[in-house]
Image (cartoon, rainbow, N blue to C red; front, side, top):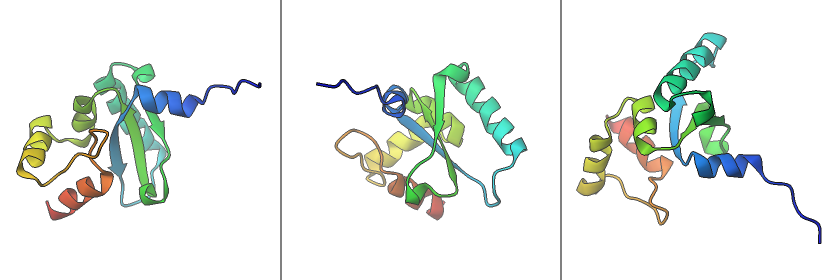
Amino acid sequence: MVQRSPNSHEIKTRAFPFVARLRREEPFRAADAAEWQGAADRIAGGPDRWYAHAGWKHDYGFKLIGFATQAQADEMLGVHSKTVRNYIVAGKLKLNGCGQIPIEAVDKIRSVA
């Protein structure tokens, strides 16, 4: 039986399950990349504590940055974690079976605000 090599993307997404989904109206430039990398380093405490990755079709035009905690992702998005909890309690956001908030629900809230 051949042993498969570890999937580094899967390992990183398990280590950093909370995602900040950043969007720019114009294409990302080098200055934008430097800005969000600096912010992610500051929030997570170093470059080895966050993970930027590409998403699926519905993530086109976004930068996805994985963090270890929900608080880090909330800070990157500029939203207080109590606001997210209040949305969940009020029924505006619902958690899926894994305890995470579907991205479509977050986008719906952001488009209304």
